[in-house]
Image (cartoon, rainbow, N blue to C red; front, top):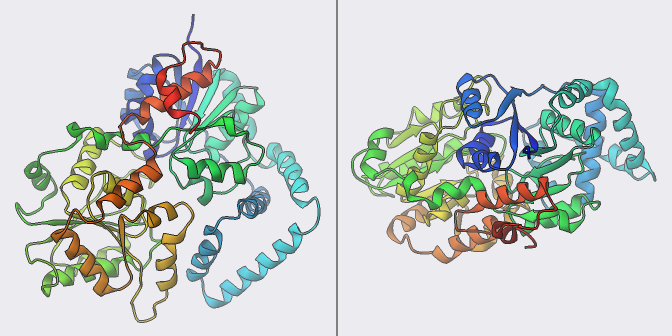
Length: 479
């Protein structure tokens, strides 16, 4: 019996880690024939995918008119209203912080007009009809339909359904009456992204909070369609083979042979534009004796954050070593994550004594390794322009379980930041129970078997009539 053909778009570097480096693609190849739509030119990555038995084709780049984007924007507003997330006012204030006063006033005025628009009965239904009508004439949807018709998949799996090209590919599958499955790449994708028009046959998520948000935002979804599988991209962390010996790690990165290392995980500029000041403050704390003199700060730039904003601060530091996560592609976010990149990250998380980041997913990574987690929540620059949003990032809906777990030391001033890092160096076991709770709340599972759960769910999705449903399916369903 031939294996079902499973279409999988691959749009960003994190999907490479999720699909390829976890071994998920190999597991899928045991029961399905993968058809990968690759979102960028990468000959080595294409060859590797083909060696694993996958067919590989270019992912068509979505094109959408300005008029269509406006309708989609309005539908995302309707979705956010229905979701009613505590994050929404936080994001609104953050967006205004990046604008001039006049631009902020104009933006808020437009919001008031939109709210009045949605007060008219039937507005959302009218917009949905308009969006569907515009799909053929205001986008290149027909190109996706032709591609799907030629490839003839029996099912489709997407990891980032909120990205336009993947969304269009999934919609073309639905139009061709092909079953579709969404495995959410990250735990914040449901609340932080806009409206997704595709009704999937199956949803795979990290935790119970994702389930609740998904059902709240999309009331048409039946609860039995949503399954908790955890976070496959963290499976590496439970396997010691991905950790280098400390001296090899230090030599590879260019760190001193001895002395504690603080990991400073940079975030994205939109979330924390004042962050370089925090790096300078920690460096100065080493210089003036607030932290041990043999301490080194390892600065890890966010994979899709422009390094340029950090360079002025880095040029002034005396105790900082910079380490880029991996080689950057021609387009930020599109490159091939290799096993060595994952090994370097796992080793960094394991060997660094204290981790510092501003409301980042890295707090979860670090909690798995039971390292003290410190979250700066202030902007003490003269204007204090970003002080409020620096505090509020820890109150976003997806991040609240981390904030409330008790494993993250939130620092609300320069003095508290230095004290928290110093305490982490001196008392690494403090807040260990809270860090364990972070992992439980966000990842659900802590056994390194989430890839198995996803593979089992995808297998069941392709063949729901199987009577020999694997045990790993039971582990991931009905949480």
